[in-house]
Every structure is written in structure tokens, then in C-alpha cells.
View: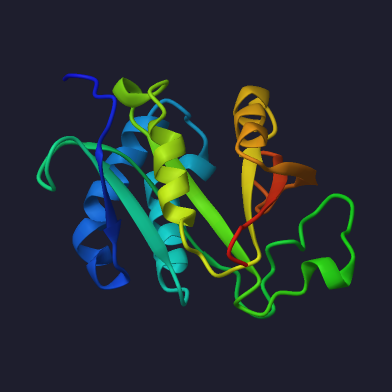
Length: 186
């Protein structure tokens, strides 16, 4: 398997989600194979991914080597937070209502950025992330970073995010740092 400095970044339309779902699950399985915690179970992730893909405005970017038939390098996906979203509800320190009020057009949530091991450290995560957010009409983007991974948090801070506090979105999930960044087109 050769490491490439650039990859083809392919947008995955929601109508192709079912076709690409197996590949997304395979990449997830490869990355989280050794976690051994129920939260990281592939079936649990599949449920979350299916829920995310059902949201209006869901978008994904799939990285591949070479042409569209090349090997997957990783992916990123997200969606606008819908009206009444519970995204902010698990915050350890509550945030102001006017900050957390979502209308389906205000905040784009980046649910996953995953890069397979051979392409880590090549800038692939940043390319996937930026392609996912390119041209988004929302005002801001948010994501969650496992609080036990400060290096990942620092990377997102380099990409323009700022930490807002912590949350645990599910009882068996790790504690996450909530992060936010302004989008240029919002």
C-alpha cells in the first residue's frame, strides 16, 4: 500500500449513502478494531451513521487514491443541526439558549473525520475536512473531540476551532470537547 500526498476527494450524495455504507463501516472497523468498548462497536456506529445520513443536508467526502475506483484513504461527513437539535444538551456547563438554538441552517456538525493509518500525517484529514466544509452556507461548524486526545484537539484549533467545554452525548461514550469554528460563507 503506497502513501500518497494527494487523493481524489469524492463527494458522496445522500442518494449514494446505501451504496457507500459498507465502505464507511469497513474504514470505521479498521480504525476502531482495538477499542473494545461497546460505544465503538461497528453496529452502534452504523446506527449513528444511518441517523446522521437521514438528516436534511447530510454531506460526505470520501478520499480515494487515484481515480474513483482507487483505495479509500478516509472520509468525513456531517449535516446541519436540525431545529430543536439535542447536540448541545449534554454540555457539562450549559451554554446560553441563544447560542444553542438551532434552525437547520445555523450550524453544520462534522460527525466524523476518519483517515486510515497509511494516510495519517499526510494532510489527508485536513483535505477531507476542508472539502466537506467548502461552500457550506451555515454560519459555523461544530465537532466533538475525545477529551483524552489533546493532540487531535490542538490540530482542530490550528484549523480555526475553539473549545467550548465538555459533554458526554451517550452514557457509555467518552467525554468529548465541544469545538466550534466560524464558516466564511455563513
